[in-house]
Image (cartoon, rainbow, N blue to C red; front, top):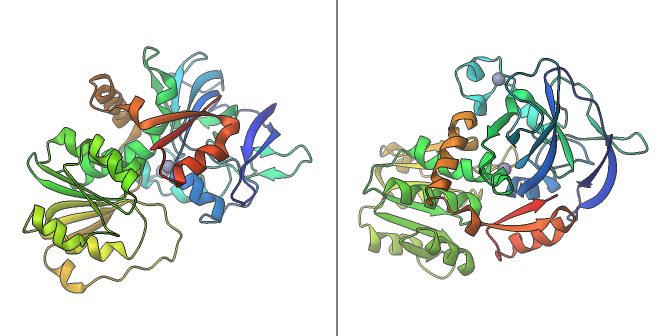
Length: 364
Ligand SMILES: [Zn+2]
Ligand SMILES: [Zn+2]
């Protein structure tokens, strides 16, 4: 079928084009995309951080309505509201243990341009040239074909257009705090980078009851957002002395740090502001081969430096928890999200890069 999509050819700007989408397999579902979030990973993926070839249809925070299901699909029917998550094999040891975020096939299924059961790419240009798939969904488009296990069914009384970002940026920020760092109420936490993921970590820290939530960024407008969403203190690390400022707030250093900028030079800073036995979690999508050097002593002093993929949570159980927090008014999606039309993607990316907005969602 012919669909409208925003393509990336590896340049800064996305290009609108009519392309062709193949047929669903027996275990797949055709979803009419209603809204899709733009994640930093989409923007970074216009610059060859992954092995797929261009052109590609990016987009991995889709939400939509089921249009058609394959013959083997269970529990999902046409008309269902769904959030689209990343692709996973559903049969390796980690998937069977309920940890699809560390699926043995995660990298191949999500970043090499092929869709799940296919050695062939699913999308094609009108001239027959293949288009890469992204994260098993390629949702910067009118329609998407998704494996049944990569759909989370949503109650119809929740506004669907707000929910796509729950599948990546917001889940990653929340999971990094709640599942990875596991702070106790009253603990202190610092968050480097106040984009959507960092702000989600700040909101989660507030829900847990952290006493000090220190937001660190180089952009004052992002620090203003951080204050609005729960940061108790903010530090502009370009203008202020980071270590000194943190010491003024918590003399021994913080219990926990979330590093969401992907800048390797920040890792040592993150360890330096962490107290003995404190924990640092890093969560950015970065290019393979990016090296980090740290003072051996800072790790040896019982500190933990760890990573997370997608917040180390199972989306099938965690996205419903996020929706509960949204319904309770603790996760203010309306205040985080700014809507644009799908065709306005380039404008949305500009506004994100300039720090004018927190989270862009494209509607279709
Ligand atoms: Zn993402
Ligand atoms: Zn797997």
